[in-house]
Length: 197
Length: 356
Image 1 (cartoon, helix red, strand yellow):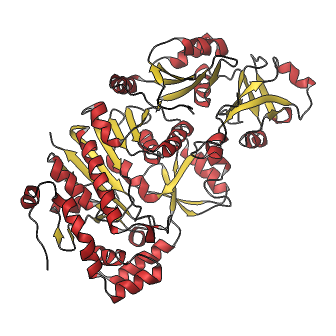
Image 2 (tube, rainbow over the protein chains, first blue to last red; image 1 turned 135 degrees about the vertical axis):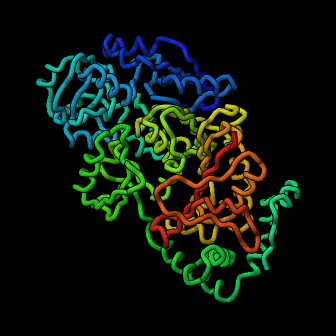
Image 3 (cartoon, rainbow over the protein chains, first blue to last red; image 1 turned 90 degrees about the horizontal axis):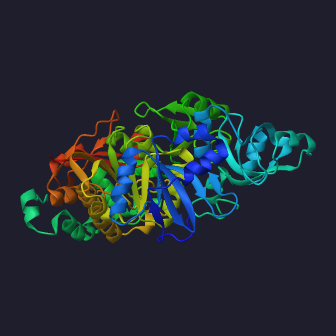
């Protein structure tokens, strides 16, 4: 959440999101962004939202009166000035996978593994069912359930799926930086930061 | 004795209007309390002024007792399956049934089921709920306002006083994530819950704005084709959820809530285009927050009329006479629910249409 509400500045232009999406998921993932205009709202860090045409008009109308939205459209993620430079939202990651028809930069976790993640724990080797490259140590990965949905975003500890075989079952494969359980653990007043980086 | 107040006379009374009549009503209500109403108030732990009002609304004390008994029982809840993220409703229903839930389809809301019997885990603690976005659980009556609003994918909707977002996400779902929903609320804490709900449920067509709802016309002009004001209220219909409501609200609090509701409703009307639909609702059975608010707003706005809600659910009519005060006859087209009659929380809904 934004730490200093009230000094947020929003802009309806910029290609930064596209650069990050292409870097992480490849050129074909950009097609998932077609029809959307990114809205960048900065306040120490930058949060990105994706707006379709009718919503874009409403946001423009609001911004003409000097106000900015608190939240708008599809939350795409957070742009940072240090690594990871972009943390995609689970919604954006899911949209991209749906669009390109496969998972990349991801691990599928067992149902038990997902349950543990929902308490903010990291992904252990013993919970990993499948692995999808490319991977890069210290870079974002999606953690999927067996239903193909994104339940958490983490930082990968490995750079190749083949490294999994060398690791013990209780070794951390991905450090969770956001999981869907956060919403409910935090209630209406977040007791922990949304992103653990 | 019935005091008949002709609308043109009320209008000519300047700023007093129906709000003005409320200010003198508290004393009159208290004077109408008798031994029997005080006995019931004491037995169920309510303030003395409340029971004569319930007698006035329901007609006799035996039914008042039925309602108070219903308020002592747990609220019947519903689950609304989130088709924005999970297209197969049956899959979610099956998962809940495997957890021991008994669900019954709500005939007038295509995504929702009544929880007839709760499963082994409460609805807010199932894996499906924790995983995010499978469903939202609420009282059944809270499904009514979005259905009465009947938004289409091309609408521009204002949801004023929107947080924590149960109805906002419902509207977004009814619109298939298309069009525009502007969700406004002033409360910082409730706004966080709104954002959480939007993200969890995968909503894409909402602009959430933290501001005073009275500022909406100033920010957007006359922009919205449909409008919902589920107004902040004293919660006199959800005493099952908050038994402290039996004693925490005095009559003057009701008047203060009413005055704020009128301002919010007028702002909502102003922001709606001619021909647009406005739904006003509260989770309160207090006429002071319901019919009096609508009466005052339509009187002051002068360009809206009440229309029958187009929903396949039998609601009780709105109140047109209250302690001798005659309210506009068209208020009968508003709808009310009571826990003992409808098996859901006490609720009020009224559909207005702005004249072309």
